[in-house]
Length: 361
Image (cartoon, rainbow, N blue to C red; front, side, top):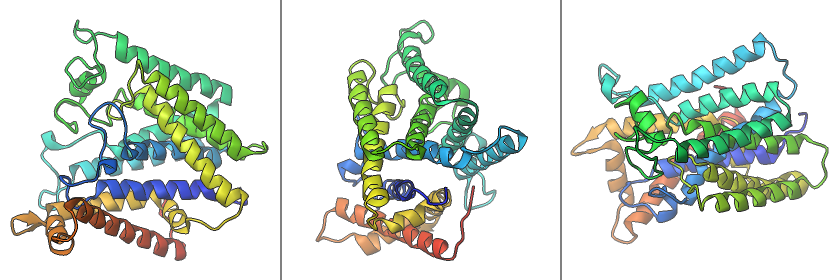
């Protein structure tokens, strides 16, 4: 597009900075409730962040591949980017700062955020370049309904399946059987294998939003508001029988998070692309190097967590020395630390953008 849709860039960048914010508190033991994930069923604002990014991945795929031919060159481009994302994720999961610089094999986590982004990007891209919107809609519905039926009707080793965190939860059971000790937790992984199916649907819903933005429809913001509101209603109704759950990435969770994504994107689109009001430039700068900002934030946080300073880590030492005092609460101190980290990466994104450095993964 000769004229970029500014709201998409802003949404992408804001989502990345929110991911940095919720992933780097001063201390995990003192975090305000909205910045925590739900214990199991239900959702908090923090639970919206990752599905928002998968949603905008789908929207961006529409812009990137709308004119691409279905040939080996296109598949190669998709495949290479997928492998890069998965490789970066595996690197984060295995990295140590000390020799031999890689964790013991049994301690390496195989699933992860970047790995899921890579897999979702691959399937969404391939489906988009090969299917029309009606077929994509059918696939999305099949993924969501099929996952619901699998999770609620398929028994686990002869025991009726449950949606609780238990051995007879199908998604958890598959992750343990396939990945063994290479999971986030001994009994499950929030970026697990089976739950990747509905996460692809999160991205496909973003594709439909991209198609609306590229269409010649008038009142696009109104259309997105209608889509968002409808998804929210259906998602919350589905919650009655298939609870909203990020760890399981339930179908109701997919619809509710995509609903909020459409509503927020519609608002930003109205402000920036319709009313032409200058807004959120720093988010636009971050969105231009979204993956590298997320990777660096995770990588540097990992390093700071491994460097020992006395009886704590460099991360803990900085937090205690600079942010902890007797005037404000520990939760506020923890949030201020996270905001400082966000400000650093926003500044880095600004410098990269102004120097026209765009690191594509």
